[in-house]
Length: 254
Image 1: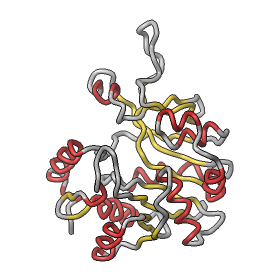
Image 2 (image 1 turned 180 degrees about the vertical axis):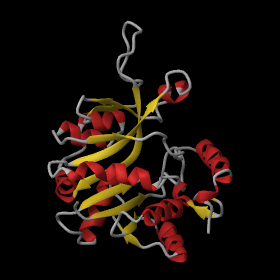
Image 3 (image 1 turned 90 degrees about the vertical axis):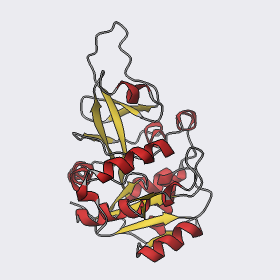
Image 4 (image 1 turned 60 degrees about the vertical axis):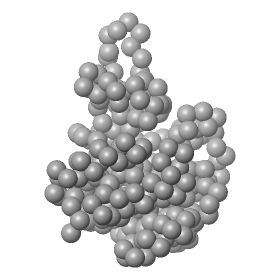
């Protein structure tokens, strides 16, 4: 297995939730929880925060979270991760994980699943998904905030969408709804390629950075996990995350 590193992109500005990385759960900001989960997993050589905001950097310094200062003009979190990988001069043969800073409840098992495809030297990138129940998860399926994945038989992503795909035209569902879980891993070579590609039409339409890779013929493996973590996209999600945190002591601040 190649060496693996993790970078947590965090920006202050957000149309749905400004200052989200500094929003607190249990008295600590979101990015700190993500960093601690990644460090405790003991599957990465090292973990860094990547941000362009002095307020986030100041808080990271207070909490002992290593960070990299990146530009403020990146179109996506993965673009920020690529710049960080270059500034850190990470191994050209390494696998770089992009762990979004709004996933405070990621688990070690998820990271193992994320890195698993790279046991095959041909793997270029990977991400995670979770099967959604058509009845129980109806609101998530219909929500544009929950990205859905269309999967190939070999586990590769065919498409990502904010729409409820795949659509069952005759009401008989042969393929399940698969929700996307927002963590990625890439070879360093693919990260560099992605930086050379301009934002693509599908990416700009759906506002999903991973579509840039698919549009340029780069394959992405998807590994399924049994339960999605409670990500934080909106202030309402934060309220739910605080409640979840309160009933799950394994995530409590130590």
